[in-house]
Length: 392
Ligand SMILES: Cc1ncc(COP(=O)(O)O)c(C=O)c1O
Image (cartoon, rainbow, N blue to C red):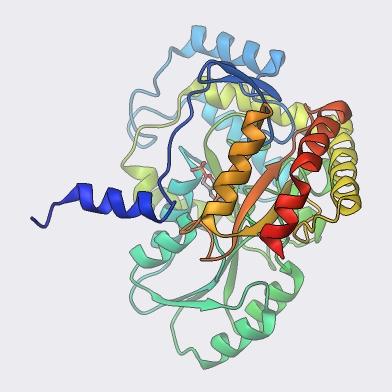
C-alpha cells in the first residue's frame, strides 16, 4: 500500500454509506426536471424564488451575452470589470442600504476573500459551530485563532469573546443555517460583538430573496444597520437564481477587499452576462412579493401535512425544511424510496452534518405548486412508518 492508495479511501467512504454520486440534470432548474433520463419532482434546489429559468432573466442574459460576449476575459483589476458588473454593484448597494458592494465569482470565494483580507495571525475568529464550510475553511486559511461557539448561543459566544486578547475579533455566522433552516439570533450576536469591540459578519446566502422587506434578507428581517452588522455577504446562486456573490459594507471595507482579498484579485471576473441577468432578477425579487407569500404558503402546508403524519421536522420557517433520520443509511434508503416514487430529495450526511444527524433536506421554491407539495406529502405518507421508526 502506498501513501496515495486512493482506492482504500474511496472504499472506506462507500462502506460508511458516505459516498457521493452526481446526478445529471437534463433540463433547466424547476420543480419538474429530468434527471439521468427520468422525470422527477424535485425538492432540492436553492432556486427559492423560481428565477433561475425566468424568461426575463434569461432574455437579459442573452442580450448581455450578445453585447459583452461570454467570458469576463480578465480579473476585475486588469480589464475584466465591465459596466454590467458595476451597475449590479450599485444596484445591490442600494438594495442592501450599504454604501458599497463588491461582486465575487462565488460565495465560497467571497467568504475566503473577506475573512483572509480582514484577519491575520494576531486576530481571532468566532464561528457558530454549524457555520457553512466556506466560512470554516476561510477561518482556517487566514491564520487567526479559530474558535467555535455553541450553535445559535450568544452566551457561549460572549464567554469566548470575553476571554480573547486578540487584536481584531470577527464574529461570523450564517444568517439562515444551510442544513438546518433556522435563523441566527443576529440582534443578540450583534450586541455581544459590539460590547466586546468586535465585528459581526453574516453570510446570508439563504436569507436574501426570502426574508425581510422586499427580500432584503436577515439584516432587514432583524432591522440591523451597518454599525451592528458591518460585513454582509450574499450569494446570487440561490434566491437570485443566477451565480456569484457579493459583499456589502462601508467604503473602507470594500476598498480593503479590492486591495487585499486574494480570491477577488487573482481570478477572472464572473461573466458580465451573469451580472446583467442578476440585475433583472434583483428587480423581480424586490417587486414580486407574491413569490415570498406563496413560498410561505407552501412551507406551512408542508409543515402541517408532516405534523398530521407524526413526522417531526426541524424547527425552521424558511424554505429549508430538514427531517432528521439518524444514520446515513436511513437517509440514503428513504431518499431512494422517494426517488422510486418520482420525487427527488437530497440525503444530507456527514461530514456535511454531524454523525447520527443525517437528514432528508426538503427545499421549496415559489415555482412549486400546492398540488406538488401534496404529491410530496402523499409520497411521504407511504413512508411515514419507516421514517417514524428511523427517528424513534
Ligand atoms: C451559507 C452558504 N454560504 C456560501 C455558500 C457558497 O456559495 P456559492 O455556491 O456561491 O459558492 C453556500 C452554498 O453554496 C452556502 O449555503
